[in-house]
Image (tube, rainbow, N blue to C red; front, side):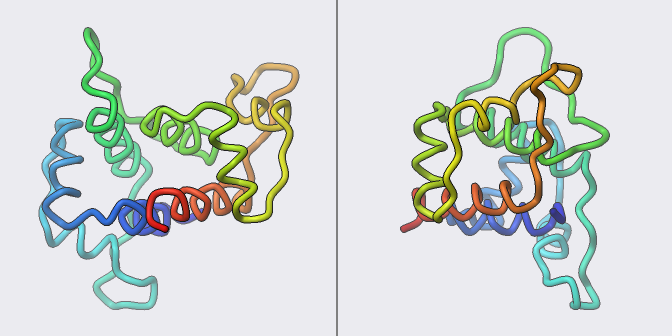
Length: 152
């Protein structure tokens, strides 16, 4: 999925305004301007559209975790240089403090049926025997279910 689309969907699901978005970046020790956020949230065909990098999205998700769960003691998490759908899914799960049943309920709301075993495969380490890549469609459906749960 495109990072900008993920940022848009999260913003819409939680009804964040520009000030809140800037505050979430600040919680991860990154200062961004309202203009940068505005450019990231524009549609792809807009001339002012700017792509959101993996580092910027990872920083935002770390800020969301800090906002929802509180800052972790000790070493601060570093934003990943490369993101994939599994990492994004895991970060959202942590930020929202979701258990397997909560995620399965969200997925059921949008008509996707997964077993707990299929779901747990997305959160395993990549070198694990039962690791499974999270496809765009799974992440897209999770974001849609999240939107239905947090912004009905």
